[in-house]
Structures are given as C-alpha cells and as structure tokens.
Image (cartoon, rainbow, N blue to C red; front, side):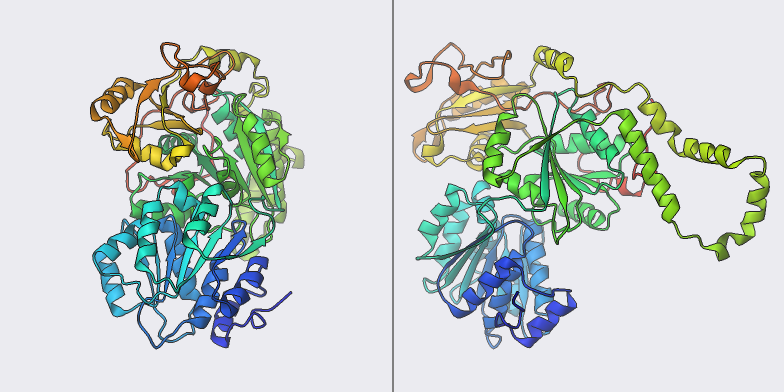
Length: 604
C-alpha cells in the first residue's frame, strides 16, 4: 500500500492528514491523486459512497494550486448544500498548514451577501450547489475565467435533481483548457452523457465495480403489508438496542409522518427533509452526529452530505423510485472498516425490484423474519445484563450510600433482587409485547390492504425517457402548473415514450384542470395527461380511463402501479397519527429520557 508522500503530496498536506488521523490512502485516492497531479486529462472516477472521494480530488488540487493568485482556480459542484458544506470543511482541514489558501462554500438558504464578500476577499477554491453558483455567476460576483479544475461530485444525483441547465451555464463560464473531474458512486446512462458532452477523452478509474455495493454491508428484506410496515419497523429497531440508523423514505410527507410516529412512541428519533429550514437541518444533523438522536428519518436528497461513519443500519421504509439510488442509501453504513446492515421493507408489489437491485450491487438479499415479541424482550434483557456486567463502579462516590441501601435490601435474597431489578426495567416492554401477533403472517393483512382505498390518483402523461424526461423534470413540470401548495407527488414511473405519476387524490380534479387550461409543453412537445385505472387484484395491469390503450399497445400492461399506499400507523393496533407541524424550530426529541435501549414505550 502506498503512502500519501509516495503519491506526490507535499509535507504541509501530509501533516494535516496526520492530524486528521489519515494513515494510508484508500484505493480511489491511490488511483486518482497521482493521475490528477501528473496529467491534465479529464477524469471519470467511480467509487462507492464513503471511500474518500473528497480527498481524492481535493488533495491533488491543493498540491497544484497557485497560492500567489487570489483568482478562482477550482470550482467544485455538489448536488446538495449539506454535501457542499461537508466538502468545503474537509478542504479547509486539508489545507490547515498551507498559507494563503482560501475556500468559499456557496449554497442556497444562506446569506448571498456574505458569500459575495468572501469571494471578493479572494478564494482559490469555490465549492457550491449548481443553483447558487449560477446565481453568483449571473451577478458577476463569481468569475470562472481562470479555472483550472472543474469537479462534478455526485454527478448522477445532480442530473437526477434536474441540474442539467445549471451545469451547462457553469461550463459556459469556464475555459476550455480546464481539467474536468467527474466523481460518482453509481454509473447510470446519464453519467455517460455528461462524459460525452462535457469531457474530452477522459481517463476512467474505478474503485471496486461500478454501482456495486460495499463488501462489508449485508442486505436483508422483510415482507410487510401497508398495515404492518410501521410495526415491523419498530420491531426491527427494538431488536437492536444499540441501533444507530438512517431510515430512508420517498417523500417529505412520509418522512415527517414516520418520524412523528417514532417520537410519539418514545424513540430517540428526528426527521431531515426539504421542508426544514437550514437552521433546523443543522440542528438535527448536529444531534445525530453526536448520537443524541439514534434514528434519523430522511429523504434521499436531505441525507446527501451526512458524513457519519458508525451507522449500524440503513432501513429502507420504502424503496427509492430509481433503484440506482439504493446504492447511495446502503453506502451510508459499513464505512471506515465497520460492518453494516441495509434493510428493505417490501410489500408484494415491491419485491420485483429486489432482483434488479441485486444485479446492480452484485449481492443477494437475505430474507429476514419480523422478530417476535419474545425475541425482542430477550435481546433487550440480555443487552441490559451485559451493560450491568461491564459497568465500572465508582466506589468513592457511592460508598457513603451503600450502608443505607444494604439495609433496605437486607430482606431480599439474590434471586428476588434480580427478579425485581429485571421487572423494574422491563415490565412496560413485557406488557407491550405480551400478546403481540405474528407480523410474518401477511394473509389477513393483504386482504385488508386490497380493500383499503388508495389515497393517491395515478395519471398517464404522454412524454417519457426518449423526451429526456426524468423524475426531477416531471416534478418540476407538475409544480409549474400551480396545482396547490405542497401538493404530494407519489410514485413516478418513467418509461420510453410515456410515463405515470401519482398525485394526492384530493388534487385530482385540480390537476386535470391545470394541465387542460395551461396546455403546457415539454421541450416543444404538447403535454397531455389522463387518469389511469388501477387493478387492485394483483397490483399489475390497468389502463387509462375510458379503456384507451397508448400507442397501439394490445394490452393494459403499461398500467403497473408502484407502492405508495396508505399511511403509517402509530402503533401495532393501527391508530393513525395526528398532524404535527413540520416547521417547528426544535422538537427536542433527542433530550427525552430513554431506557437502556435508547427509547421508552408507553403502555397502551
């Protein structure tokens, strides 16, 4: 294994790395650092999340940077403000002993005036989100005429979020002589299009196989129905007393709902999604990094840039719309040499996606059984006993109290004392799970879920992948119609020449009216939508209202529906949550008193 010195880095950088605890470079760093230092060729680099990509592109830039010039020499783009802030902070740590190196991070949700003042003082390296970077270019506050390096970090996600136009504008502002460095964890077709459009004969390096999951992460799935999804989630958490996890949800509403239910049920949890202000997001992430919060419920975008190395679990409350994003989710655990578990909760309609994900990560999902109440109580009890065994007794502090304690307990023998101790800690949990049903028996719940009205309406739209449509662009098109404030968009299915999307059924008529009256177009093509029917018997098939079939199809097979059914329940008995505001400044969930397993159950 190489050392950082052997890769060509100078002493001040190596000293900063030593202070940070970096001993040897990772595989992607071994390949990328000398390539960037010794060559001006463009670079495509693919590595799993958590393998040190930030250091791989920033260290050689710091090595080659001209500190005598205050002009912007490197522009680094990332899809989210959290990731941008993380990259900026990392680079500042790396250049701790380099004189006259200035780094500015620019992103929305923060003062543009302060960012402009920082740029005016002179910054050789600018890290930014695409939107704010373009805003500053348009204001002529950010000048990229002297840029030597353009870094596209998490390039696939920037395209998924609809930043192609912003990327084009940044490219127009940079010189043709720059070196473009593309770093990505997954390798969808869109990333190849970036390489074709933005790069010249790029060199390609790969750490591991493209899109493959991390070696030290195991993958499990649990079969659920919509009625048992949340109870199963709670049981998995209860089975693991020391859980430190991110639960991924598809939408902001789902994220807030799951987090609210967990908090109400006494878990040390909180939410992270786009409806929170920057101050709220910073507060939640700070608590999670300090482990004041054990469970973070988040959307895919909000969790980008959350650099936590000790996660025990990633739990997919529902699978992402784009299965490639599963790699990003599961890569949040199993970092820095640790092992991790990625868990997926799937109903019958969602199981088919697992096979496609297995091809991407080149690993098999193991089927897990939702734990019984007896298993959970035994695990929790043994965990508590282990903690009692391992606790260090500070005799100097408790010696003065021991005589009175011994006197009060003198009539109890050893067995009675243990029984009372265990009962004190576990009566509530034992009572909670006393008559807990088997959640692995899905037959009755499946019949109930088929009889339950869906709260989403599914629409057909006459544009698809061949029109360069992606989920982000479709969401933008829907939002442009001004259907309603914070309208909930459900499952999205992008096909070659047409697509499907789901809308809260309360907005069904408004959606039809908005598209009809506005007569929108997409890249010059007239857009039409229609409501589709859903076949509840098997989750497949279906067609548009009136029985029409698109583009001469002979059957209704285009109408398959993705899972976006029902809402989480707040207990195993199926009680619904009450609405809670998502914009309160601090819900304080991390400060509640918890039991030895990190949360407390209320008796029902």
